[in-house]
Length: 317
Image (cartoon, rainbow, N blue to C red; front, side):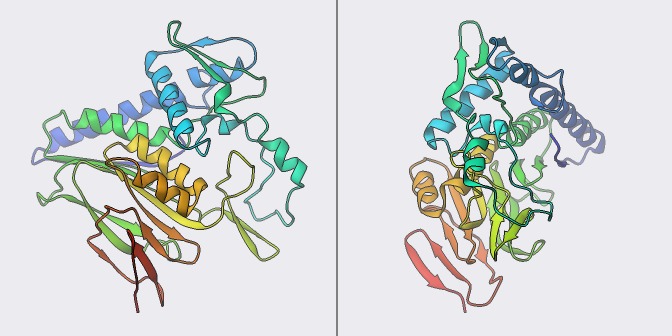
């Protein structure tokens, strides 16, 4: 999946811990073979090859993942869309880009992105991409799904606790090595590697997405690598989005969705979803959380750091 996975197993029995980690790795590799866009033998690649031609019969597991993805697309009005893989890459974040792409070029780049054109047939368990040139990819949900599946297997192997970290998509089970709830640090987008807040979690997923690693500056404005699939333009306004819920797959998809929706619509969405919370850091370094999220503490990352928790607002000096 092009990502680094870190697996942790907590047990006084070293052999049992190693066995659980190996089982988790095996499961991640299995899922990669199923959903990888880079592997021409994967069912996902077969769906793309047959875009605009014919439906492809797939495993029930992949069919269900695609069906859940479409539900999230509907929930977010297209802010999340696995047909995003159809995007023509008119933006370059390698340091070479000096001018904005032409508006018509940008519009054309997203012409084939449309989750409504992913046609599912439950009876035949088939998937059809309606238009030639369409593609699907699981970059915004696959890591979370793999983390879920790996942890599920590890949790049934007699451990005291386990944690899977899929490049920022975290999910935990049981207790840490001290017998306590796992604690997850939220990184300051302006100072990578420095934690400004901690979350105490128990059998919960925390997924964080940021725009602070890949971006381009044109005419003094910063454009991030996160593209709105509905417009073709990089999203602006947020530096970091963290989603907290019981399911890493859902958290993965919602982190992308909230980034695209922006602060106000993103918070509105999360506040209407039961059992799901979020923490947002804006480009201005203001911190906002959903109404029911409780942080262990907030450490001031920069001077005059403002934050808003729920409907209350205060300022750190």
